[in-house]
Length: 594
Image 1 (cartoon, rainbow, N blue to C red):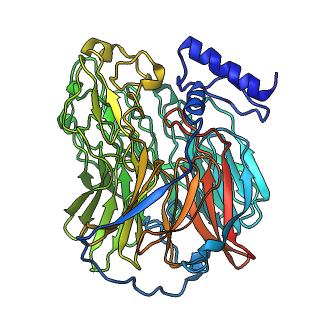
Image 2: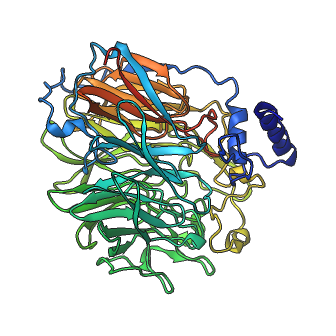
Image 3: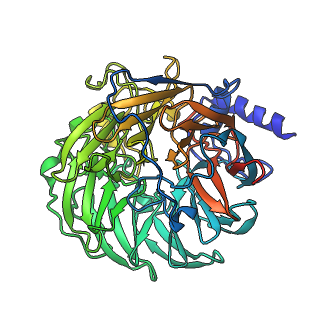
């Protein structure tokens, strides 16, 4: 049976069985031994006849900011690399490279691709350091030539699959690479060879705890937390590990520690207790996973940790209170893990609106020290770090019906949905324009609650959302395009005032990374596999092309052999998003002739 007929037969079987979108890993595999999940088959059906990418930009007539961008400074030696998830530990994502610029970007082309051979939720935040480009999938870490895509080495790991086949990247420090796994471990590798050096366990896989986040590394320490906050009994923790040995230096509970919780290392000092969690009998404190990377201020030694949702995700009647530290950015002493501060953005969350990405720490044109953060609630927040006060909360996608409580006897439709707002990639800051760029998903969710008895009947280690659905694809609510809402936004927001100057709407959601440069450009891609270069000052499209599958991972720029390149993680496939089925690839772009 040929591959096309085999896939068609599988789809028919899944439809007849009524299980398309189950999200579990199937034993079916294609010729490249790529595991195919039934959720991905649903996505294949929904992506048939997908339209070409289209964008439209509008300008805000009420914007009163600076008239012209500031001149770019000469690039520093560090500009050649992209050594951490968000380039800098402070997560601005700005590159001071300008070889590719507004005048010549029309000559951009794909120069090579690296095919991972896998269908996976390819969210890897790519690195380029020491002359090699580093990426990850859920089971692999690889090193390739940053100019030719030739593979240097690739290391494969074997462990049980997770409901979402995701890894968001690696960290680099002193000749070593570090990544998380979906069975709750952190692994270290030799940068030159890919040989495994050590492993450390930081999560309980039996409770659904995993480590999809990209670590960051600083002064001999590796910082990473565990996810799994959508599972009953699972809890988020943040850790610092010794980079040379993997020994846990400190551990911090992101939700209250209770009897029986595993303590794996010295605990950071914390004021957290159970006073903001009024649980009904039979409901354990759960949630607070940190499923994306973190931000660190080397000047102050403070670590900024984004914290996800409480569980059950949608039924907050069983967990009365603000449920600290969920829906927050928690600030810790990076050396000791001691609590310093927190910013709760989404108190008593019932929409699954995680604080889903690392905040950017920036100095604005107006001289403010700012923390910019964009969770899944569809807003961009700006906090003045001089006094920790909120300066603005700017809507950045469709906000609709967010105050209505969920109920057991009716469907409630709201926007942004549980897969809306800004997902796992951070806002980016351009010091030349003083703009914060935030890429957003415009997509809604419909939820109907389980009864109290059904919610409490879930076993520890099971997905615990409180959503009543007989379709396993809808365990996180019904993600439907029947309402016609399926798009993305890119806003350029003044960092000092929170007022947007321009905004672009794409006909596909924007979940991948956004990268501004000193060439006057901002690069981004969408879930249609379309990649764009815009004029950062005006938002006008200067270049655009479909370069592969859905773009949900890293977008980085660097120099190789003296020429500026742009590398993009393409081929995101997930039960959650109805996107085209394409294998995960790294596409490297450059100017014609370079």
